[in-house]
Length: 423
Image (spheres, one colour):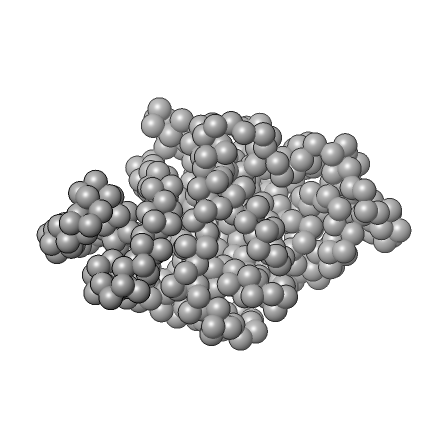
């Protein structure tokens, strides 16, 4: 499947290069060859390669066998910092799981100042819940303190603002325990909890249900999920302790996942283990989050020497290397769209041409395939989501990458120049 997807993507890219030669010459008349080649490569050719690779990967996905496993005991780590408003619902969603094994909960209060710790102490939690007090040193340190107390073979992480579907732990543990011995982490499926709060949350709803969901579907097919996100993922405890847990970084879950992969382990994704997480409701907070995510990716490249690792498998290395293009794509988008609109306003569709629209069509086709797979999955577990905004989808399809680009570029630059880190 991997080879077929790669060959199709390469062949389409070669065809697009021949098709785009005249377009490059036309753009060069106005902007020069350097900028013309740069824009065409990073706005059309490489995104087109990604779309084809992902599309073929999803179309050739093997149907998963329905397997049952012994429901092992598991410990859930919940790092909490100023989570008084949300943590009660999070705990309740874990305690209401349809799971036969014992679920132990380690809640690590990371020096909260809003009364989170006091609320937890007043809740009269059962003996399976352990509250750990810590000084405020960040999420990674909090998770590591919780990991020290884990005695079960498996560990799950859940953010303090995330609620689990009633079947979430059963599904994620079933996937992890039925995977091959090399698989040490399984990422759960995240959707947006506070979808109707603002227009930016509606945009993120489409991002989580199409963009993030689709990427993880593809990566999971190759046992190379690049981010077992802290908001909801399951791990083999032994592997976590073997690499020393989470590193103190802005992208602690990215770095952790890449470290596991570089040690020769595998990671996957389970589409029907659903959790609902809160996303930023204001553009400023959204920008800060995406800047942190982008910075975390560069941080992972710096901390994990993927090209020196002899244990890292070829598929994981290839998927990691695709991330190298993201800064160049973001910069190209930031240049391409304003210039394209200016030319269009002057009556010249030089950039917003049929060729660029062709790339968008491939993107929409990919979205359709992802949407079908998501809907089928939701039917399997009888989970219904609220209707998403059609206007938000239009903005997501046309402008979301442009909205993201400046924040991502700021994140890349911050990490490259080792600027002070803010969580």
